[in-house]
Amino acid sequence: MGTFTVRARVWNPADRDREAAVELLVDTGATYTVMPTSLLRGLGVEPVRTARLRLADGRTVERPLGEVGMEVGGISTGATPTVFGEEGIYLLGAVTMEQLGLAPDPVQKRLIPTETLLMMRMHQYQPHFI
Image 1 (cartoon, rainbow, N blue to C red):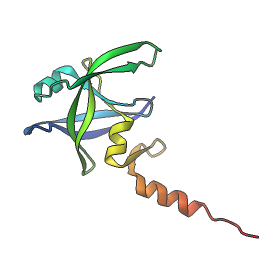
Image 2: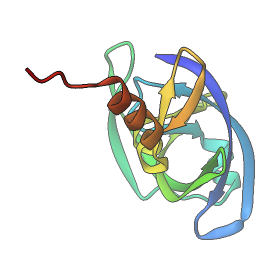
Image 3: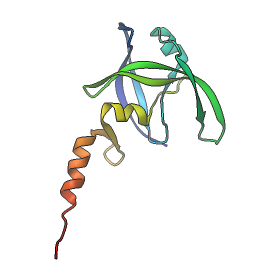
Image 4: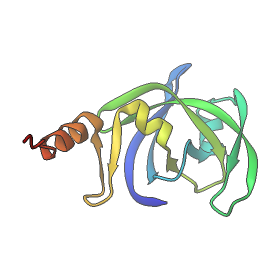
């Protein structure tokens, strides 16, 4: 389920000179990041394997999967699995968010570092000993 969008830079890990600016829907229900096939091909990204995916409507499909480098909010990952998708589909999936060390904050509509999230939870938890 998409909640908000973030801006990112993506590139071909094998050719850092080929990059693009994109806006991705943060999709807390998506395992993998998805971008249009035309964008990935334009970056020179080639499929490395196929992935079996379950769509929101319950259908299971096989789609090509490649790798892109990505930067979101100054944090980057060397290569993250990315599905070759349909035109107009830009989703930031859970695998990429985990690699970047970011988690969605749907209330404030932003991504926050997972360390910050852990510190916030640790601060809220104060054990009471008897």
